[in-house]
Length: 66
Image 1 (spheres, rainbow, N blue to C red):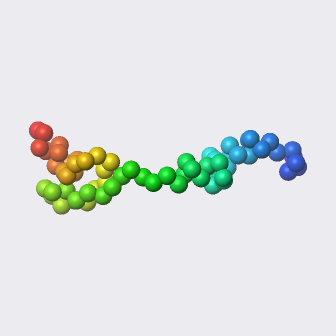
Image 2: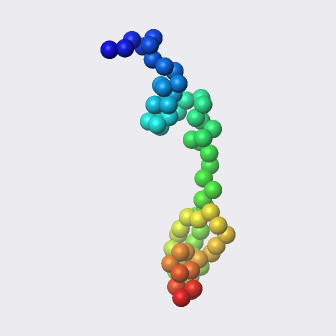
Image 3: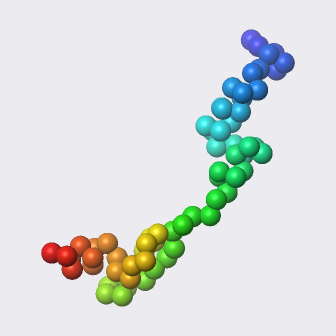
């Protein structure tokens, strides 16, 4: 069984990143604000999240385009 002194720091950092542990090197990536915002559909009143400038939910847009 390897001792703690024999652990490769790059390998340990890679494992921590895959496991979702926060370290100084990953804080910039993990803590970014989402570009999604909540919008209320003008037609049906459903609350949905989107990153585009639209006022209709996916279902209402799909029905409109048929």
